[in-house]
Image 1: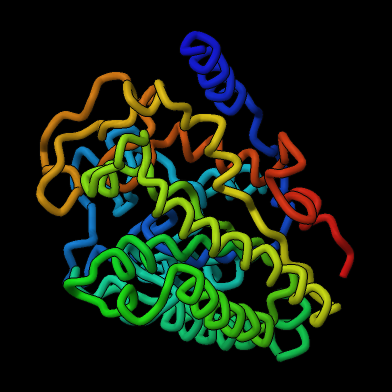
Image 2: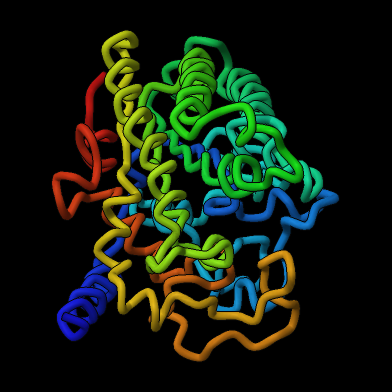
Length: 358
Protein backbone atom coordinates (compact mmCIF):
# COMPACT_ATOMS: atom_id res chain seq x y z
CA UNK A 1 0.00 0.00 0.00
CA UNK A 2 2.83 2.39 0.85
CA UNK A 3 4.49 1.69 -2.50
CA UNK A 4 1.30 2.33 -4.49
CA UNK A 5 0.50 5.52 -2.59
CA UNK A 6 3.96 6.91 -3.28
CA UNK A 7 3.84 5.97 -6.94
CA UNK A 8 0.52 7.83 -7.28
CA UNK A 9 1.97 10.80 -5.42
CA UNK A 10 5.06 10.98 -7.65
CA UNK A 11 2.98 10.58 -10.82
CA UNK A 12 0.76 13.46 -9.71
CA UNK A 13 3.83 15.62 -9.18
CA UNK A 14 5.31 14.71 -12.55
CA UNK A 15 2.02 15.35 -14.33
CA UNK A 16 1.83 18.93 -13.07
CA UNK A 17 5.51 19.67 -13.58
CA UNK A 18 5.46 18.66 -17.25
CA UNK A 19 2.01 20.12 -17.96
CA UNK A 20 2.59 22.90 -20.51
CA UNK A 21 1.49 26.36 -19.53
CA UNK A 22 -0.75 28.38 -21.83
CA UNK A 23 1.05 30.10 -24.69
CA UNK A 24 -0.03 33.30 -26.44
CA UNK A 25 -2.37 36.08 -25.42
CA UNK A 26 -4.07 35.84 -22.02
CA UNK A 27 -7.35 33.94 -22.09
CA UNK A 28 -9.03 36.66 -20.01
CA UNK A 29 -8.33 40.40 -20.13
CA UNK A 30 -7.71 40.58 -16.39
CA UNK A 31 -7.33 38.41 -13.31
CA UNK A 32 -8.19 39.49 -9.77
CA UNK A 33 -7.19 37.45 -6.71
CA UNK A 34 -8.57 37.70 -3.18
CA UNK A 35 -7.51 35.62 -0.23
CA UNK A 36 -5.01 34.79 2.48
CA UNK A 37 -1.39 33.63 2.70
CA UNK A 38 -2.01 30.88 0.15
CA UNK A 39 -2.11 33.62 -2.51
CA UNK A 40 -0.46 36.65 -0.82
CA UNK A 41 2.46 37.80 -2.97
CA UNK A 42 3.67 40.79 -0.98
CA UNK A 43 0.71 42.76 0.37
CA UNK A 44 1.76 42.10 3.97
CA UNK A 45 5.38 43.17 3.56
CA UNK A 46 4.88 46.68 4.93
CA UNK A 47 2.24 45.82 7.53
CA UNK A 48 2.94 45.61 11.25
CA UNK A 49 2.31 41.89 11.56
CA UNK A 50 3.96 38.58 12.35
CA UNK A 51 2.39 37.22 9.16
CA UNK A 52 4.96 38.31 6.62
CA UNK A 53 7.70 36.31 4.98
CA UNK A 54 9.85 38.61 2.85
CA UNK A 55 13.01 36.74 3.84
CA UNK A 56 14.83 33.52 3.01
CA UNK A 57 14.18 30.60 2.95
CA UNK A 58 10.82 31.81 1.55
CA UNK A 59 11.27 32.41 -2.16
CA UNK A 60 14.38 30.25 -2.32
CA UNK A 61 13.07 28.69 -5.56
CA UNK A 62 11.32 31.82 -6.88
CA UNK A 63 13.12 33.73 -9.66
CA UNK A 64 12.85 37.02 -7.76
CA UNK A 65 13.81 35.55 -4.39
CA UNK A 66 11.87 36.48 -1.23
CA UNK A 67 8.85 38.58 -2.24
CA UNK A 68 6.34 37.92 0.55
CA UNK A 69 5.03 34.64 -0.88
CA UNK A 70 4.44 32.09 1.87
CA UNK A 71 6.21 29.24 0.08
CA UNK A 72 9.51 28.29 -1.51
CA UNK A 73 8.45 29.26 -5.05
CA UNK A 74 5.21 30.11 -6.81
CA UNK A 75 1.87 30.13 -5.08
CA UNK A 76 -1.48 29.01 -6.49
CA UNK A 77 -2.31 32.45 -7.91
CA UNK A 78 1.04 32.64 -9.73
CA UNK A 79 0.50 29.29 -11.40
CA UNK A 80 -3.08 30.11 -12.39
CA UNK A 81 -1.86 33.36 -13.97
CA UNK A 82 0.59 31.41 -16.13
CA UNK A 83 -2.06 28.85 -17.06
CA UNK A 84 -4.31 31.73 -18.10
CA UNK A 85 -1.58 32.96 -20.43
CA UNK A 86 -0.33 36.02 -18.54
CA UNK A 87 3.30 36.76 -19.33
CA UNK A 88 3.96 38.27 -15.90
CA UNK A 89 2.75 37.40 -12.42
CA UNK A 90 -0.24 39.40 -11.19
CA UNK A 91 1.17 42.21 -8.97
CA UNK A 92 0.15 42.78 -5.35
CA UNK A 93 -2.28 45.63 -4.77
CA UNK A 94 0.26 47.25 -2.44
CA UNK A 95 2.67 47.98 -5.30
CA UNK A 96 0.33 48.01 -8.32
CA UNK A 97 0.29 51.05 -10.55
CA UNK A 98 -1.04 52.30 -13.86
CA UNK A 99 -2.39 49.63 -16.20
CA UNK A 100 -1.95 46.96 -13.51
CA UNK A 101 -5.43 47.89 -12.30
CA UNK A 102 -6.85 47.10 -15.73
CA UNK A 103 -4.92 43.83 -16.19
CA UNK A 104 -5.47 42.52 -12.66
CA UNK A 105 -4.14 42.76 -9.13
CA UNK A 106 -3.70 40.43 -6.17
CA UNK A 107 -5.32 41.54 -2.90
CA UNK A 108 -4.34 38.45 -0.86
CA UNK A 109 -3.10 38.98 2.69
CA UNK A 110 -1.50 36.55 5.11
CA UNK A 111 -3.66 35.77 8.20
CA UNK A 112 -6.72 37.42 6.60
CA UNK A 113 -10.15 35.87 6.87
CA UNK A 114 -13.80 36.16 6.01
CA UNK A 115 -14.35 37.60 9.49
CA UNK A 116 -12.66 40.92 10.21
CA UNK A 117 -11.26 39.86 13.60
CA UNK A 118 -9.58 36.75 12.19
CA UNK A 119 -5.80 36.88 12.65
CA UNK A 120 -5.93 39.86 15.01
CA UNK A 121 -3.47 38.27 17.43
CA UNK A 122 -0.78 38.39 14.72
CA UNK A 123 -1.14 42.09 13.97
CA UNK A 124 -2.40 43.93 10.93
CA UNK A 125 -3.91 42.06 7.97
CA UNK A 126 -6.17 42.92 5.07
CA UNK A 127 -9.45 41.13 5.74
CA UNK A 128 -11.73 40.15 2.87
CA UNK A 129 -13.92 43.17 3.61
CA UNK A 130 -10.88 45.44 3.26
CA UNK A 131 -9.81 43.62 0.10
CA UNK A 132 -13.22 44.35 -1.37
CA UNK A 133 -12.81 48.04 -0.50
CA UNK A 134 -9.46 47.97 -2.28
CA UNK A 135 -11.16 46.41 -5.29
CA UNK A 136 -13.74 49.20 -5.24
CA UNK A 137 -10.82 51.59 -5.76
CA UNK A 138 -9.62 49.39 -8.62
CA UNK A 139 -13.04 49.60 -10.25
CA UNK A 140 -12.87 53.41 -10.03
CA UNK A 141 -9.44 53.37 -11.65
CA UNK A 142 -10.81 51.20 -14.45
CA UNK A 143 -13.51 53.79 -15.11
CA UNK A 144 -10.85 56.51 -15.37
CA UNK A 145 -8.43 54.47 -17.49
CA UNK A 146 -11.06 53.02 -19.82
CA UNK A 147 -13.03 56.22 -20.20
CA UNK A 148 -16.46 55.54 -18.72
CA UNK A 149 -18.61 53.24 -16.60
CA UNK A 150 -19.89 51.24 -19.57
CA UNK A 151 -16.41 50.37 -20.85
CA UNK A 152 -15.23 49.45 -17.36
CA UNK A 153 -18.28 47.26 -16.73
CA UNK A 154 -17.81 45.47 -20.05
CA UNK A 155 -14.12 44.90 -19.34
CA UNK A 156 -14.51 43.71 -15.75
CA UNK A 157 -17.31 41.34 -16.72
CA UNK A 158 -14.86 39.35 -18.85
CA UNK A 159 -12.25 38.95 -16.11
CA UNK A 160 -11.59 35.99 -13.83
CA UNK A 161 -12.01 36.50 -10.08
CA UNK A 162 -10.54 33.91 -7.73
CA UNK A 163 -11.00 33.71 -3.97
CA UNK A 164 -8.88 31.52 -1.70
CA UNK A 165 -9.94 32.34 1.85
CA UNK A 166 -11.42 30.84 5.00
CA UNK A 167 -8.54 28.79 6.39
CA UNK A 168 -7.59 31.49 8.90
CA UNK A 169 -11.16 31.69 10.14
CA UNK A 170 -10.36 28.27 11.61
CA UNK A 171 -6.57 28.34 12.18
CA UNK A 172 -6.39 31.92 13.48
CA UNK A 173 -9.87 32.29 14.93
CA UNK A 174 -12.04 29.29 15.85
CA UNK A 175 -9.10 27.20 17.09
CA UNK A 176 -7.45 30.08 18.99
CA UNK A 177 -9.86 30.31 21.97
CA UNK A 178 -7.40 32.41 23.95
CA UNK A 179 -7.77 35.19 21.34
CA UNK A 180 -11.29 34.67 19.98
CA UNK A 181 -14.65 33.63 21.41
CA UNK A 182 -16.12 31.95 18.32
CA UNK A 183 -15.54 28.39 19.52
CA UNK A 184 -17.46 29.22 22.70
CA UNK A 185 -20.29 30.92 20.83
CA UNK A 186 -20.81 28.44 18.00
CA UNK A 187 -20.77 24.70 17.37
CA UNK A 188 -18.75 23.76 14.25
CA UNK A 189 -21.95 23.56 12.20
CA UNK A 190 -23.19 26.93 13.47
CA UNK A 191 -19.81 28.52 12.79
CA UNK A 192 -19.74 27.18 9.24
CA UNK A 193 -23.23 28.61 8.71
CA UNK A 194 -22.23 32.04 10.04
CA UNK A 195 -19.09 32.06 7.89
CA UNK A 196 -20.98 31.13 4.74
CA UNK A 197 -23.63 33.77 5.37
CA UNK A 198 -20.98 36.48 5.61
CA UNK A 199 -18.99 35.06 2.67
CA UNK A 200 -22.13 35.02 0.53
CA UNK A 201 -22.69 38.72 1.17
CA UNK A 202 -19.07 39.43 0.28
CA UNK A 203 -19.43 37.51 -2.99
CA UNK A 204 -22.55 39.52 -3.79
CA UNK A 205 -20.58 42.71 -3.13
CA UNK A 206 -17.97 41.50 -5.61
CA UNK A 207 -20.76 40.82 -8.09
CA UNK A 208 -22.08 44.37 -7.56
CA UNK A 209 -18.59 45.65 -8.41
CA UNK A 210 -18.83 43.91 -11.79
CA UNK A 211 -17.52 40.37 -11.27
CA UNK A 212 -19.25 37.82 -13.50
CA UNK A 213 -16.83 34.87 -13.62
CA UNK A 214 -15.89 33.81 -10.11
CA UNK A 215 -14.02 30.77 -8.81
CA UNK A 216 -14.12 30.12 -5.06
CA UNK A 217 -11.73 27.63 -3.52
CA UNK A 218 -12.97 25.39 -0.77
CA UNK A 219 -10.73 24.75 2.23
CA UNK A 220 -8.10 22.03 2.22
CA UNK A 221 -7.45 19.46 4.96
CA UNK A 222 -6.45 21.95 7.66
CA UNK A 223 -6.42 19.15 10.23
CA UNK A 224 -3.32 17.75 8.52
CA UNK A 225 -1.07 20.81 8.68
CA UNK A 226 1.82 20.53 11.18
CA UNK A 227 0.42 23.39 13.28
CA UNK A 228 -2.79 21.45 13.88
CA UNK A 229 -1.04 18.13 14.44
CA UNK A 230 0.57 19.72 17.49
CA UNK A 231 -2.92 19.76 19.07
CA UNK A 232 -2.85 15.95 19.20
CA UNK A 233 -4.54 13.53 16.83
CA UNK A 234 -6.01 10.87 19.17
CA UNK A 235 -4.29 8.16 17.18
CA UNK A 236 -5.24 9.43 13.72
CA UNK A 237 -2.76 10.74 11.20
CA UNK A 238 -4.59 14.09 11.08
CA UNK A 239 -6.87 15.97 13.47
CA UNK A 240 -10.17 14.52 12.33
CA UNK A 241 -12.33 16.95 14.29
CA UNK A 242 -10.75 19.90 12.44
CA UNK A 243 -11.13 18.29 9.03
CA UNK A 244 -14.76 17.46 9.84
CA UNK A 245 -15.43 21.08 10.83
CA UNK A 246 -13.80 22.32 7.63
CA UNK A 247 -15.85 19.91 5.55
CA UNK A 248 -19.02 21.44 7.00
CA UNK A 249 -17.87 24.78 5.60
CA UNK A 250 -17.02 23.24 2.23
CA UNK A 251 -20.38 21.50 1.90
CA UNK A 252 -22.24 24.73 2.67
CA UNK A 253 -20.04 26.71 0.28
CA UNK A 254 -20.81 24.34 -2.59
CA UNK A 255 -24.54 24.72 -1.90
CA UNK A 256 -24.15 28.50 -1.79
CA UNK A 257 -22.51 28.42 -5.22
CA UNK A 258 -25.70 26.81 -6.49
CA UNK A 259 -27.78 29.56 -4.85
CA UNK A 260 -25.65 32.32 -6.34
CA UNK A 261 -25.88 30.82 -9.81
CA UNK A 262 -29.65 30.51 -9.45
CA UNK A 263 -30.17 34.08 -8.29
CA UNK A 264 -27.46 35.94 -10.22
CA UNK A 265 -28.21 34.57 -13.67
CA UNK A 266 -25.87 36.88 -15.59
CA UNK A 267 -22.87 35.58 -13.63
CA UNK A 268 -21.28 32.18 -13.00
CA UNK A 269 -19.68 30.95 -9.80
CA UNK A 270 -17.71 27.72 -9.51
CA UNK A 271 -16.40 25.80 -6.49
CA UNK A 272 -12.90 24.31 -6.43
CA UNK A 273 -12.73 21.24 -4.21
CA UNK A 274 -9.31 21.68 -2.60
CA UNK A 275 -10.12 18.99 -0.01
CA UNK A 276 -10.71 16.40 -2.72
CA UNK A 277 -7.69 17.45 -4.77
CA UNK A 278 -5.43 17.13 -1.73
CA UNK A 279 -6.91 13.83 -0.56
CA UNK A 280 -4.98 11.86 -3.17
CA UNK A 281 -1.70 13.19 -1.79
CA UNK A 282 -2.40 12.95 1.94
CA UNK A 283 -2.29 9.18 2.35
CA UNK A 284 -1.39 7.91 5.81
CA UNK A 285 2.18 6.80 5.26
CA UNK A 286 3.07 9.71 3.01
CA UNK A 287 1.84 12.06 5.75
CA UNK A 288 3.97 10.31 8.36
CA UNK A 289 7.13 10.45 6.26
CA UNK A 290 6.75 13.69 4.29
CA UNK A 291 4.28 15.66 6.43
CA UNK A 292 6.81 17.52 8.57
CA UNK A 293 7.77 21.09 7.62
CA UNK A 294 10.57 21.54 5.10
CA UNK A 295 12.16 24.38 7.05
CA UNK A 296 13.06 24.83 10.69
CA UNK A 297 10.19 26.79 12.21
CA UNK A 298 9.98 29.27 15.07
CA UNK A 299 7.29 29.36 17.74
CA UNK A 300 4.88 31.10 15.33
CA UNK A 301 5.14 28.22 12.87
CA UNK A 302 6.91 30.21 10.15
CA UNK A 303 10.41 29.45 8.87
CA UNK A 304 13.30 30.84 10.91
CA UNK A 305 14.99 33.56 8.81
CA UNK A 306 18.17 32.53 7.05
CA UNK A 307 17.95 28.81 7.83
CA UNK A 308 18.49 26.32 5.00
CA UNK A 309 15.32 24.37 4.14
CA UNK A 310 15.18 20.67 3.30
CA UNK A 311 17.13 19.81 0.12
CA UNK A 312 14.37 17.85 -1.70
CA UNK A 313 11.52 20.32 -1.43
CA UNK A 314 9.27 18.81 -4.17
CA UNK A 315 8.71 15.72 -2.05
CA UNK A 316 7.44 17.57 1.01
CA UNK A 317 3.79 18.35 1.67
CA UNK A 318 4.48 21.42 3.82
CA UNK A 319 7.10 24.14 3.59
CA UNK A 320 6.44 25.49 7.10
CA UNK A 321 3.81 24.65 9.72
CA UNK A 322 0.97 26.03 7.58
CA UNK A 323 1.81 26.34 3.90
CA UNK A 324 2.49 23.93 1.05
CA UNK A 325 5.55 24.07 -1.20
CA UNK A 326 5.36 25.02 -4.86
CA UNK A 327 4.86 21.40 -5.94
CA UNK A 328 1.59 21.10 -4.05
CA UNK A 329 0.52 24.52 -5.34
CA UNK A 330 1.12 23.21 -8.86
CA UNK A 331 -1.10 20.25 -8.20
CA UNK A 332 -3.97 22.33 -6.81
CA UNK A 333 -3.78 25.08 -9.43
CA UNK A 334 -3.58 22.79 -12.45
CA UNK A 335 -6.50 20.65 -11.30
CA UNK A 336 -8.52 23.77 -10.56
CA UNK A 337 -7.80 25.02 -14.06
CA UNK A 338 -8.41 21.65 -15.77
CA UNK A 339 -10.19 19.03 -13.68
CA UNK A 340 -8.56 15.64 -13.49
CA UNK A 341 -11.62 14.19 -11.74
CA UNK A 342 -15.22 15.38 -11.92
CA UNK A 343 -15.08 16.03 -8.17
CA UNK A 344 -12.23 18.57 -8.53
CA UNK A 345 -14.52 21.46 -9.50
CA UNK A 346 -18.25 22.18 -9.49
CA UNK A 347 -20.13 22.59 -11.73
CA UNK A 348 -17.00 22.75 -13.91
CA UNK A 349 -13.37 23.91 -13.89
CA UNK A 350 -11.77 27.32 -14.45
CA UNK A 351 -10.88 26.57 -18.06
CA UNK A 352 -14.58 26.04 -18.82
CA UNK A 353 -15.63 29.07 -16.77
CA UNK A 354 -13.48 31.55 -18.70
CA UNK A 355 -14.83 30.26 -22.04
CA UNK A 356 -18.44 31.01 -21.14
CA UNK A 357 -20.28 33.71 -23.05
CA UNK A 358 -22.25 35.61 -20.42
